[in-house]
Length: 527
Image (tube, rainbow, N blue to C red; front, side, top):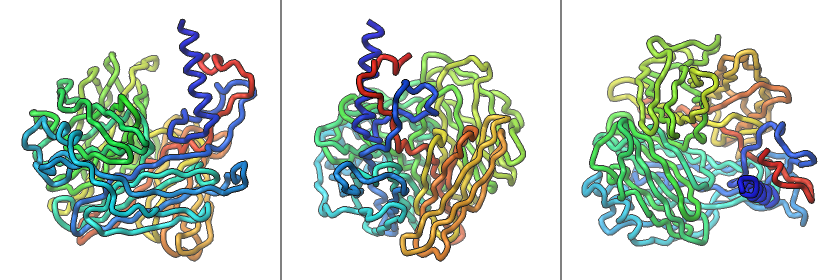
């Protein structure tokens, strides 16, 4: 029975590879466990979802779309398409959990149900946004509309492998002020968000977007320091086709909680998910989903001038987890003073203030099992602040996947970008090729290679295209034989004395999939 079931799973994986849909492709891996005779081919279709950017009257959002060069045209000779289109929005009658800026947590426990039963507002404009014309050259678009919609879209043919869209919003004033950045997400059935809050000084909305022509049904589970927080209020949230539903997390529980973890589970269909967090003192930013829970996690890209760092972690499985905490610095791995190990109780969120962890030296956090044989999965994220007093700004760094083949960060400008690379394993140096693409308005690509010593991190000002005009993309590719490497990109764009910034992790883009040979016994995929 077990082998039959695993064979069916293998069939599902193989079908995903054959259809080449990046949004459901399994991690690429290094190919060592690939079935004999398998071929690695570019994906033929990718899906991305961008949440509604802001409700501020003084906000401006830039979209930057990019696809790396390299994939050939489809079998029919066509090069493909890549574009996003506006989605509908669900809002409840009181504009509470289903709409921004409404009840602000009043009538707790009703918001998600209201959103699920609310009114669906169709998009006013269905014109494509940032459609690509050629690979290797970014396309940009800008909006300052406070009711700018969420976007859903897909790429196929030569644009599908590595298609990336960056959404960057600058809000000059008000409760949501700051720089909010997000790499638009792929649809899936489960997401983890350590670091959310339902406290009175925060408004955290999870944006659920359905890319498909059938409804999705979603459950939201909150975990605090003592275990589960959310009850039935987070269950059975309906997300209509091609529509987004924003849910205010404080409506899911009567217990205000500063440090919590959110688990988003689509029981029917699939969705994209991202959390928009707004703090009365620290500004606002997007909290992207963390990598799938694993025994070891890496959180890359803590800036050298961070004034505070808070780690929020959860062991979502049935077992507790004991972790060794290390900071990868330019000179090697060090143990933060007073935090040699971290104990995580199963199902309970743990938060630790690491204060000025970096002490003027950029780094990345590496969490590994204290017992090398432990398989207890964990998930984690960092809340990082820069500045002091009324001039503070926050950003989030979730655990991310390694860059196995390629990763991309769009919306880089002439100044303000920092690329963070970390090779977390001692003795396994990482050699990485970084390419700055042509600019959206012109410029010639430039490539530079960096070596990161095993057990250390490297922060660099990335290369810029020659003759740059507009925005450009950075593509990160480990060289053959390179040790494991993780990456993140920070954008810094000061706003009136506030060191506004945002950090995007750069996971592998899963732009290729393994296709089994014809007639292969698919059960070997699980051995």
